Length: 350
Image (cartoon, rainbow, N blue to C red; front, top):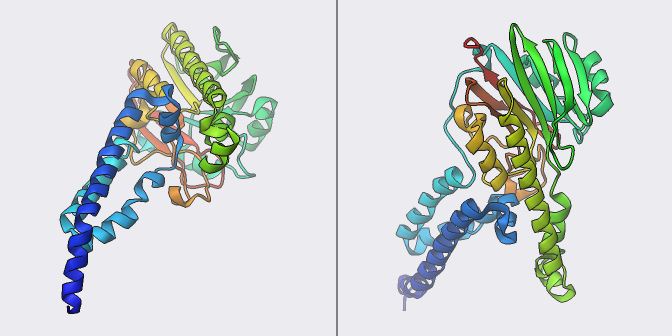
């Protein structure tokens, strides 16, 4: 038998298994992503999907597509068609919306500066020229930032700090929270009062590390990681606590008599329960006026499955339905745990 005959025989032999594997991958992947959207952090497996690097789910295509191009080109087309679906549906990519921040008359910038790696968001601040800067994990160091950023005056409440070009009327914890996960600031903008909630929900990092264990085989023998009911129960309790905090935040903000902007490190992926709860009650400014993925964490990564960059949008800005957002942009790449996010507003109607 000649080389062409051997190739055709091999092609025929591999076509059926390849179709089965591709169908399993496509159907299983779509079901898992759909369930993840619906269930979010209510189940340990969908929680891991929410916080995992997207390259983990795209990696099989690096094998399937080249093989399909040789054996069955129709399958390659199917796989390629799934890529934009995954990018838009699960990863949240969208075409750029909104105007340039220069066209807004009130800008807000938020950044968690706790693990900034001795870097600064100054270049982004100079580009955005925000009226208000909300900082998490800054505490009493807000006055150092006040010296470093002329033209602003600062105030702090707990771990939270604010730099403002406008008079600060109030700096206090948000009432009614189980833990001090947010502070409340009032600023006077002209004749109008704005309320700003500076948010930092507890990080799930420790729980996720325990949930992943030290690898599936190791966990299977040692009884740790995902195979431990105790670890799963602890992780679920943590996720439920964060959702309860988000509800308390939303309830407190809904009672405000003035327009509210909620910004900061929510430690909650954009497709999860916390983000969904917040976006149902307030305007998610990235979705309304942002563009691209809007990923903010981690600012630098050695993970090839994240293409060595951020892969989650856990730093959010929301606002009352009465406000008019015009833009939302994420700081360009910087070797910091969290990238800054800026949103612009048109306050001419207030």
